[in-house]
Figure 1 (cartoon, one colour):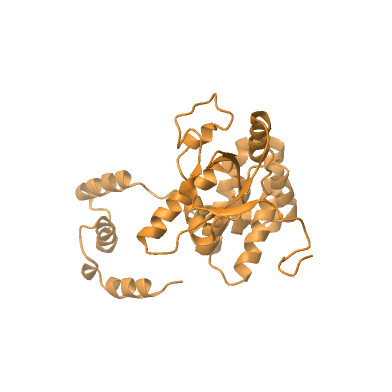
Figure 2: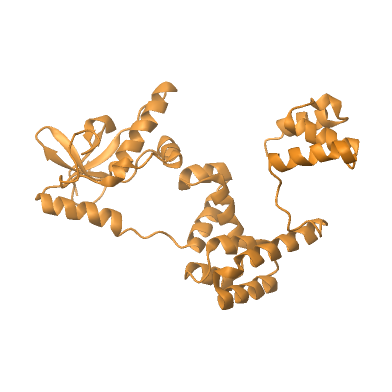
Length: 292
């Protein structure tokens, strides 16, 4: 091992490049599907979560390229390059340092390059839901927020909350989700139930299939309503603006709703200001100052 080498290992042909200087076939060129390095996924829209992740963390996984004269053409990692370009646009507008993309050179025939491209995209295996939930738990334990986690994992904040709910699931339910016996969306709804209730609902799902997902979600809502002292409203979904508008029109005739309720709805719609409702201005100031 040489004195200037960090690890006792063979060095590879690795570089750091401006993503704008890496050629994505079909995106930066006029080539079509007949080209061995063309991939239809270059037409997919960029993902906001991936852009934010790269802005925060950079690109860790090297893009594989082949040399074509002085150009570096992407063999695998097209989406990383395109997302890094957008990340740099935003970083430049913010006056921040621009990112470089790690690049490794591959050599071989057109057929070999095409095979590498297939392998990188098709052989990947995603973590099972319980592993994602455990990784989330460990990440949050370091003092990071759920918003931080959403950026690092490259998913929405709601997805992070759903993963977090899995930490409250019985092991039997987790195993059923990981094995694909029940959908994760149904399991998330079980987190508010006791362990015995979770297992009972799990048996219903296993016996009757996905047709019982709605009943499982209803059971979870009912349990949550009991816990919060609102039993009777547990199956109700938040109303849309159209429904609320119709209710208000009917109320003009029947005068069935009290003044405080009406003022609250009018405030939500922007028809009146918070000063029209006693104590609301103070609550808003408190809420705006509370960053939790």
